Image (cartoon, rainbow, N blue to C red; front, side):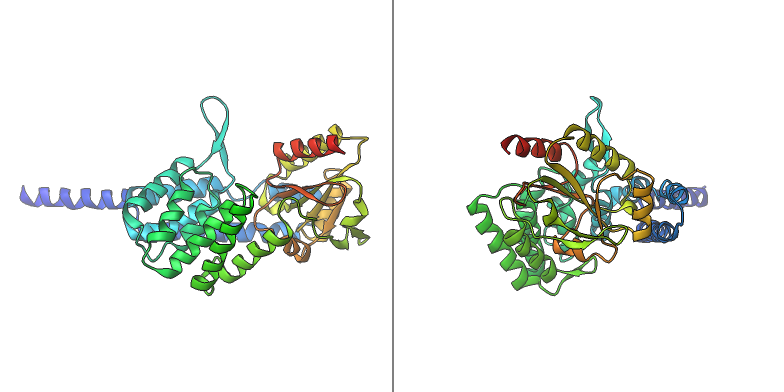
Length: 358
């Protein structure tokens, strides 16, 4: 009897451990998804026909499913320190994924997970020296409590390097909240702290120094009200192009690449916008990171009807410090920036307002 009870106890413990998840399981989820995604990108790049490319595009690895698998592994263990790193990965890959609530409105797919992770950090991990990747991952999350959490980390975490990364994350969040002089001064102070305390820290292959320098560049050259830098390059057919060629027009400058997925939705948004503003001084100008042949095929089929810079090596993209895709700028006829952010209704509303002013 005692042996049976002991065996049952061992079996129950094993099942609980399997259900609770382990660091090895979390690493397996990440490795599998990243390997599949890398293979998918390579297949997409070597596709030779629009039909083949469309077929491969439809086979994009399921990011939502990977995020849910990771959440199943780490959710029961959020009080444990090993979950901090996979939590950062989950937030990063799920950024931009949405679902519908009961009323039919869009909401972040992993919004509940983001909130639970934030609460776990507040309760268990504020003093952790491993929070740097999670600080930057929180920047991608549309969660109202994120800013206050980052401010606590920046103030109270005992590791100066973590404080510096939190300062960088706060500066990045403030970029989307206001362009008031007081906010700008605070951002500059935070970026200075990030460079002093954490310049050599590397997150996702990029140093904090480089990220902070990009933010300083954005403040100086790419903030609302600034004149956007000119772009000089070539189109899908090798023809010369310049952004300044569209002087006098309201321009939606759209940075995009098909490997991010959602190309059909993006092209539909662009088509509707061009139809709405037909006959007005308006144009969508793309900067595309796909291989030049792939862009040429998309334009030849009529799927992409707007002019595009071909930028497979990322030089033009780097000039605008693009870190998320797709990204849109709304420029007036003098290239003054009126909006930057995701492609969607705000882009169309801003373009309409600028055209009305014009």
